[in-house]
Length: 102
Image 1 (cartoon, rainbow, N blue to C red):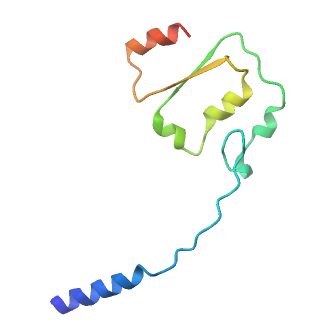
Image 2: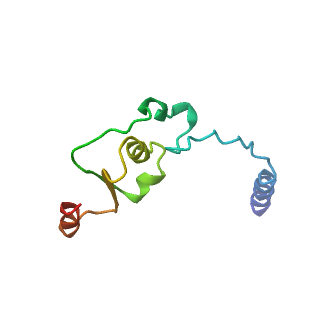
């Protein structure tokens, strides 16, 4: 029985020497950090969207690393100061006071 386990371990050890095929990463957009093939920043145009109110982006920290990356696209479309990004796992009432003042 121990002989069978040793043989299996030897086979598993051989697997550690297998080369993993590394692919080159796709080129990323300089604005939204999405892959160029799925980026739509080019459709935003050069002129930013004017708003009469401030846009508040509530973002969970894990969303920042997701590949959708919608917040940077929104930031690219709006003028500076037209949005505020608040990151957090929870947005309790105490943080709502902060949002009222933005």
